[in-house]
Amino acid sequence: MPEPTESLAAQVARDYQDVALVLQGGGALGAYQAGVVEALAGAGVHPHWVAGISIGALNAAIIAGNPPERRVEQLHAFWDTICTPPPWLGVPVWFDASGLPAGMQGGLSSVAAWSAVVSGQKGFFRPRMPPPFLEPHATPNKASWYDTTPLRATLERLADFDRINDPRQMHVSVGAVNVRTGNFVYFDNTKQQLRPEHFMASGALPPGFAAVEIDGEYYWDGGMVSNTPLYRVLHDEPERDLLVFQVDLWSARGEVPHDLAGVADRGKEIQYSSRTRLITDAMREARSRKRMLRDLMALVPPARREDPAFLAAAQESCSAQVNLIHLIYRDKPYEGHFKDYEFSAASMRAHWQAGMADMQHTLDHPQWFARPSVEQAFVTHDVHRG
Image 1: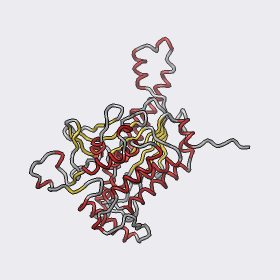
Image 2: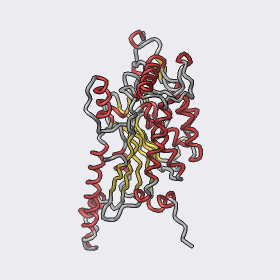
Image 3: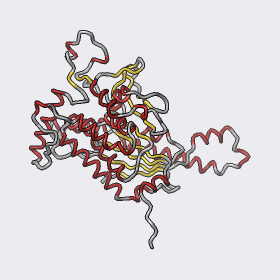
Image 4: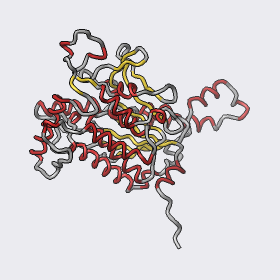
């Protein structure tokens, strides 16, 4: 009889000390990340660390705030909530536009985006009343077109913050920008208690959303400085073998635009893609140097290993290995420059299915999950490169 084949989940558990899920910002496109999570859960692969920016931080709250068996269910509840159309729009929640011609899909998509601008999104944001230019008592937390108070209630309903603040369950990191200093900061459950406002701050993109006050300081969306927390994850785990799923919502590559709508779309892609590959290449080179330093240290005689220079080198060296699997959402033909604030149920389901399909394609290549060889130290599997 043939020996039983080891499951992918067992292989990952054997080969890696940590599994990290890195979630980029991208507004309505974030349902793609939820699809990735569902496919991973179906394979029995669950992250130990989730790090997010903007919508990635909101997804992170739902993921970290629920046990593995409820994460997909609660992600569905979150996205179904915030993608509910207003009653006046007259479009049923279940409406499926996938069978329509691209032109008609594009028209419905633009209507949904216009609806978000005019009415906001249930459980997420609503137009600020009075508008900011009529606000008699201007303050930093009112200087925006929309009020995100509904988001707090949604997060508190769908995420257990006691669980979020237990690092034994999952390590959680979300990025934001200090408005006063301009410095990028991470809120991390190994260093502080995370509350709904930490996640809301990570997604407070001006001028749509106001700065969020936390302990006397005001914070905006982390995507204003860096739209991916990849560097944080790679930098903070130098001595643990790590499998990273980097799930991006904006592609650095694209066509040269021919009209103003295309310019707006391409500009967002370049701005928010956050040079993921640049970070990856830089970290790969850094890991190679750290591995080389570790190899050189092995040549030092034992009698000299208490020297200050050797001890300093030991702090900089690293023998851990990293496998980074990079997934990037690819635009649908009908999507326009408003795709990040187009919250129709039809588009949400399309994004979700794309994430599931891309992750399933990745799972169909178990060799991509293999632990890097000693010589490699850092490998990248770019699912969409080509």
